Image (tube, rainbow, N blue to C red; front, top):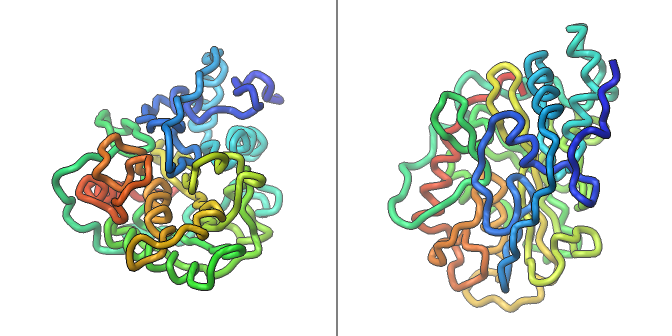
Length: 333
């Protein structure tokens, strides 16, 4: 029976907010200073922005829908950078999961075949012992076993990423590799550089693109753009970063599966204040959002939302990153 897409609560722009899915599935989350969980989060050089006002929600339909989808083995996908595509993806694949038939070809699906590169144990040995001091916040939390835990990437498969260096200096790809290596050391997560891509940044990006990337979740896209393409970069926002989340139908646990990191093209015009390019701290900050760190009010940490003389991850940042590297595997995604 067709499911009424129009009954989903939406924002004034027509998007289904991530918090609707979080509350419907029983997931709680920590909202950062000015963006909602899993939405692209910006690194600013100026004033903070207030949280958007939440609309009145008709929750009964959403709760029933998502509970049924997860129970039937559907991959329920979060909404950013896809915005409303996640729920639509689950609904459009309802017929296959309800029938329990063979998996259709990738081109006719809205999610990948489960388990791509997933191992029984983590890829790398594990994150370094967490640092002490400072503070951190998580972009999303959940209570799968009754205890609050952050939403994480699976440590049992590598996180692939691609780079669109259009508009960036010649050293950009190498600087991305350097910052990602730092992130891997802090989290114990494995990252794989899939090289350059012709996919450019976009305001709304699909997390499953089989024609471009094959039958797997789309790799993280790291690129350079501006507010004309990505409105979240308007004003004094120097970068945005975030991840798409999905519920593993085998375990009921939410994981990050794809994501984006975009730097505003104007950051490359800023002169360096240290021996490294001025955009590297911004890149590190947005990569922190990619793996699940939210903004913190502690101005001594790199994840503070306002630019400062802090250029690398500090004790609180590192403690949060280590925790984000200790998530469970995701065999059903």
